[in-house]
Every structure is written in structure tokens, then in C-alpha cells.
Image (tube, rainbow, N blue to C red; front, side, top):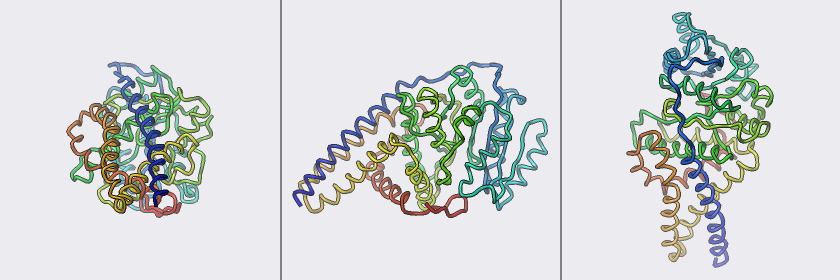
Length: 385
């Protein structure tokens, strides 16, 4: 067993050093990322299509549509809205039809995704279908269960017309948390957004979120669309990878602007949380070597932390080392959390970050393994991996 302990310690040091450099780089990137201040009363030249894929969203779809028609600092003739109904079994389709009838002065259209056209890549096919019918030069996607602030569209357009990137990655945050479990999700999810922005700033884009994503229609076509139909989801990151490969790292930019934040809600139950994170982890098999290296390194650090706790049950001399290791990891993670919660103006949530220190490795290892071997439920469907 002495040999096993020596191997464990060597791996812990190796992946610990890699983890420190990765998080330090993303933290540096986040704090170097300049906040964008959008000009007021700007007349926009870009035609925009906002795409909302929706499945069984009867409780949410009217809210996001209402948010969109309240984007009063963008002329309504400058953008269109396309809702793609992904075979909803509730009244989503009818609600959108009624909304369109009540707001005929807005360019809102509704498309139904046929079962035979969906295959196993429901959301990607829905967005692709909408893009084919779109009139805008800039495509913006969000989700039916999201809420957006009143200057969301103008912030994106201002940034696009100033910088002209091929892709704009926007911030996403949870809100309306009512339980401790939901607040913990907010902290963990916020760290992912900060890493997303930091990685883009240091020209190493690795993540994005389809709930707040914009890209040139021309770039989408030249990149060949989303690609990789092996995975049901992944409309966001797979497209990021293709645009990065075709146009370079500088073609992707992160919009650090509080008016551009899209808000959604955390998972209400542990079961739905596990299914969501398993879905996210399942896409790892389709990523490139850069992202796989980051994912594997982070996974190994957390696996080694759990392994160290187990080993310390048999080797008491390891217990202090593991306590210090957990504390050190928390200190490495803290600066980027401070940065993102300063941006969201929710610094009070940092007090809840301490319980995540021991819980995070368990969740990462568990959902990472499920993402390789298990299936998950998504929008009422069971998806095999």
C-alpha cells in the first residue's frame, strides 16, 4: 500500500499544479476582461433574428416573448423572433399562436419541428431550421424558460457593431433561488460563467451557453452548422469549436455587461440536477483535445480529492494533508468567485461557498461518470448516451 500512497501523492501534486495554472489563468482572464458600456440612443444597422427553441414551456414562453417585445431601445423593425416548437405535448404551441395574434406589429413567427426531422438532436435541429428561415444577419439564441432585461438586445447589438466578432458569448445567471440547494447551484454555475469569460479573454475559449449566444449567420453557414449529430445537445459548444477552428480564437468574444445577463432558474430537485449535469458531461466525448485536457485535469483533481479522503481512513497520517488540500483548493477557487459575484452584484452568496468545497468533488466525479455510461431525461425524453 505504500506504493499506492506514493502514486496517489505524485498524481495529486501533478494534477494539482495543472489545476492551479488553469484556474489562475481563467481568474487573470476574468479580471482583465473589460466591462462593456453600451451607448444610449444608438441606431443599429444590423438585422437580428432571435431564436427560441421550446418544448413543453407553457408556463414560461409568454414571459420570454413579453421580455423581447419590451426591448424598446431597439426598433422593432430591426429584429424578428422565431419560436421553434419541439413537439410540445402541452399548450406551448397554442400560447405562442395567441401571442402572435395579439402582437401583429412585431415580426414573430412560429415553426413546428416535425418528428421525422428531429432525429436525436432535437434542439440543434430546431435552431438549424429557424436559421434556414431567418432574415437576420446576426443570430441570437436564448431558451424559453429564461428572462431577459430590457436593454439585453441593445447591449448585444452595440457590442457586435463595435467589435464585429463572429460569436458573442453572453453571461447567464440563476435567479429566484428559494432553497439552499438552489443557492449552491447559483454559486457553482456562476463559477462556470466566470471561467467561460476568463478563458475567452486569454484566447482559450472552452465554453459557452446557448441561453445567451450570438453569432453571424454567415459564420454559422461557413462553419457547417453545429455538426456532430451523435449528441442531442451541444448546439453551443460544438459551434464554438467550429468557429474557433475556422476563424481563430479572436473571433469569439465574451460580453461583460450587466444589461446582457440572461436569467434562468436552478434545478428544483436533486434528480433533475443530476440529469442536467449528466447531459452537460455527456458532450465531453465530442470535444477537442484542448477542452478534453481541461475537463480531464479538473476531473482528476476532484477524483484524487475523494480518493485521498478514502485513503486517509486507512492512513491517518494523510488526514491533515487532505484537510489542507481542500482548504488550498478553496483558496484557489475563491478569487474568481469574488470577481463573478461582484459583476452580478450578489456578493452575499459568497458566504455559502464553503459547503461547496467538500460537495463539489463528489458531484463532479459522479456526474462525470454518468455522462460516459448513463442516460438522462431531457424535456420529457429519455436520451441514451
